[in-house]
Length: 259
Image (cartoon, rainbow, N blue to C red; front, side, top):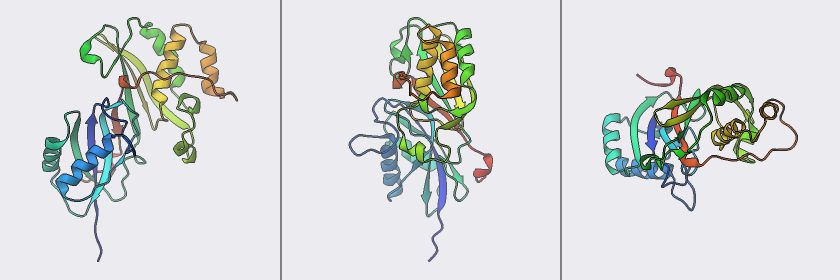
């Protein structure tokens, strides 16, 4: 008997503080696990989802996307309502959309956008999703440095060490950074970056490096050489704290979606 599967993209927002990251792990609670358990409970069957991005422990998402398959059609609005009633308060389903056969949340994504948020005035309401720095370099200087990263190149040095998934990938460590800039909204300074893909820890390393150059702890010419020439010895670059980082958007060709 032929079984026809319907594939859906599910859009998920979450605060990452209570979780070990997006991806299911053996000995820690992950966002993916919580969403799969909620889907299984509501639909009365085991459900496995595959996400677009592997956010690290403590990282947030305003729009994470995953796909799952069902052997029957569903009412997306009803399923969203039922899921949100049982999910914890730090996870929310924002949309469910039917897609064409074979559509993949990770491999069909055309871009991802991340924000790293820094507050320049101590505010307890931002403590879990923004980093407080009492002094910030001028935005003009930060944006001048940031232009170095707007290119297609090998970003291995700006990622967590030795990610075997990316080494096996046909693209290796090459990413196409389409846009990157800093902006200020009230007391928040936001670094926003858009690329076709990101390596593990890449945004947090880039933010840390830009700030290091801006305050004179790293030479601008040295950074330019590191980006474009990839010296034989891997440099020691630091990561910004995870709680300032948010996955804001994952984009797809509209042709993937069923009207």
